[in-house]
Amino acid sequence: MANRVKIGVLNLMHDKLDTQQRFARVLPDADLTFFYPRMHYQNRPVPPEVAKTSQPLDLNQIKEFDGFIITGAPLDHLDFDQVTYIEEVRCLLQLLDKYKLQQLYFCWGAMAALDYFYNIQKRILSKKIFGVFPHLIIEPHPLLNGLSKGFIAPHARYAEMDKTQIMQDPRLTINSVDDNGHLFMVSSLEKPEQNFIFSHIEYGRKGLKKEYEREIAAHPERHYKKPENYSLSNLLFQWKDTQKTFFNNWLTQVKKSKLVLLDK
Image 1 (cartoon, rainbow, N blue to C red):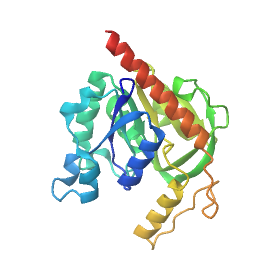
Image 2: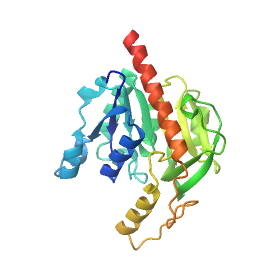
Image 3: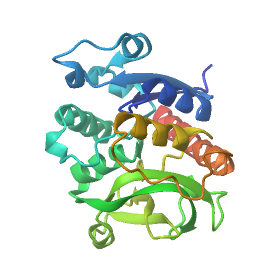
Image 4: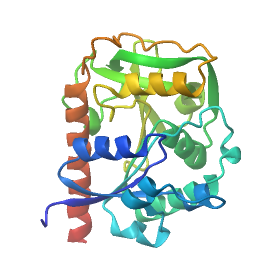
């Protein structure tokens, strides 16, 4: 259909198939193409389930998209330069900036992008932000239209970008935080196509439970905190309305941007 937009997604999550299904669910009116970083598999075979459902990142394709998403990744504790595929991500960021595509960066993807574009520092937290929290809107933004004070969203991360640096940078604004002051959304004032989201707002009802169970299974010897305000035995999709409103707003932005480019 002519009114459908093309969205590229660099999928860096552990649960790649679940992540694909999540984004397909929240963006049903977009044509999604999922990529994996080539450098991540340079010394080992690509898992069959990844090769079957995703493509190796092709930087020559980037200009063909109307918008692009970089997901989170379980890399909060690593310095960016320790990530095997960071240069590939930076090359992608350079092209997204060049072509001015509508960009949505999630969690680690948002951290890497803020580091690359604005040299904002990442800070490791003393404990994981994990659970479902109410939020405040500090600075209105089109992506937050329809969300009211106290809107609900899930968080799951071990790091936070330096809020003082962000507030001191005239190019950036903090749009929303949770009730503990943790970042939800940062946007660029000079490049409105760039938006940085620190919530796993794409998660479905079971997302936090699966993350908790995955961490315990990987390291049963460690103690992991349970998600706050989220019962593991009675799963509630408290952020369903937030999710629908937010992604509808972003899709509207992508469509508007596409029309502007077509008129040029």
